[in-house]
Image (cartoon, rainbow, N blue to C red; front, side, top):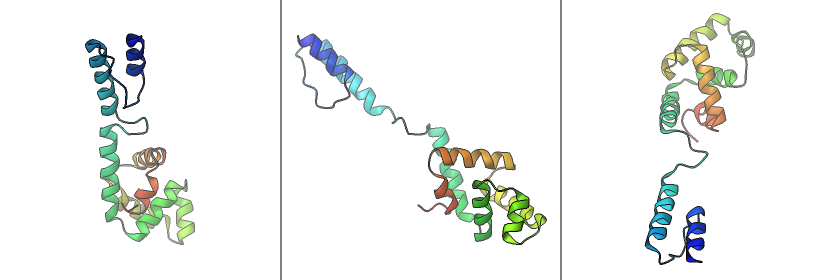
Length: 135
């Protein structure tokens, strides 16, 4: 019976398991529970991705108000031509803002920007970027 209880405790994620008195089972259970505590949650991003996302959000603090509006339009799926009409500015002006946005965020193309926007949307941090690093 203690062995069965020990295996059940090892399989569970409960923190308040009772030792069985069998050293090997108790050590194994303690090991499994320590590994479970160290493991990031299912929702957590890998640290490399989290680092890239956090850096991008931090760099967004340097965007001007107009650049932030344009970035929001990109996040909503608008194209350059659409944005120029929405803001009553020329396509060339939007493209000028794009180069500033790319430079400030550290991306080198529209495709890279869209990829970052997609990652941020999936990890529910897009709004944090669009607000300039504030939550």
